[in-house]
Image (cartoon, rainbow, N blue to C red; front, top):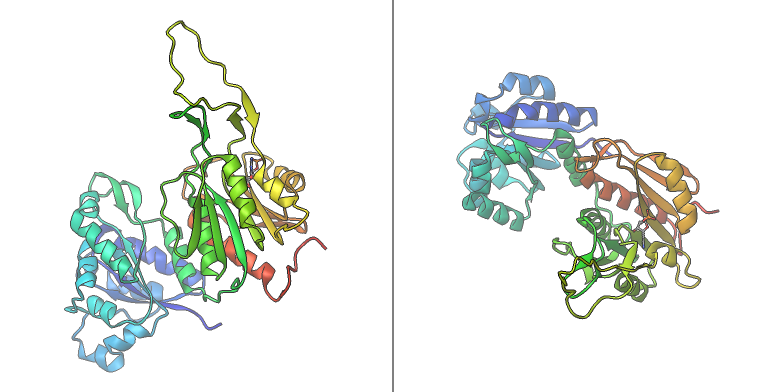
Length: 408
Ligand code: C5P
């Protein structure tokens, strides 16, 4: 595969200095960068430092005759595999929405036939302004990928969303966008569980957990991008259905199991849901009332079915590849190996949730199969889904009837 190249548009914002680190990190991964520096961008970084890091001439002016004879703006915007705008200021995004072409950056964006990634960074009020949000919605509708900014303290002293995402997250997004979309799972059917389950106590109360569903939805989207037909059985979460995925909404663990069994046969089952271990034996049909006598009700619990274990042990219609998740705080790999055996699945995605992983941006994953352990580098959480989908696609590659999997 030939080396990949990006065209980086550096906008005028305080975060512009981080584009230098981005160029360096991409270079380390063998991704070349050619850069356009906007006029405002030159107030924050110099063309000389960008040129030194990228090892390429830096482009700053639209109407420079030398540039046009060396490389015209059309060719410039098409010579790369991907256009990245970082930082994408409110002004640059507004220009792109309206198709302005009054400087080199906006002209390159208009003239390109390549995918475009915008990495916004701006003050929180500017980010939240209706005009910016409207522009972002329009850019996404036009097929541009717009990353969500980070939340945190800002150079201007305020706090909120608007910070440039961590460079590692930008690199992961660029790598994902540069990867060839080969659709290796076309003709395969994948079933994913995601989110929490909700176990009712009475018509208004329930037992549940904090699962957001993001990882499961991410994996469903990544498998769909690989060409699989995807059925996503989800507990209650506030996420939209990923594009091209059949979403079945459920509440309880028993409903989740039933929906999964009805979706069989499938080739791939990925059990990401945080299924409640117990449910109240009886859900009252009327709201439980406080009697005011100092008496608290006793809630008797029953164990919920283990969905992963049930699907793994199916005699008929067992999926060719069954994957479970294990979040562990210590002895991660030993516990995950035990879980692999106990649940009867083929792979376990083990997640080390000790340290700063919980609520953080990165994840430390080990993929446990019967053949051994594949330790992944620390990855942005959104890169885990893509990498897992790739592993699944590789496992099915070149095997028409089933799987060239670990077991034998
Ligand atoms: O036993 P533990 O809950 O740690 O196992 C986690 C794995 O088992 C996850 O893949 C989860 O989706 C699955 N699981 C399940 N049904 C349950 C409990 C866990 O499918 N009742």
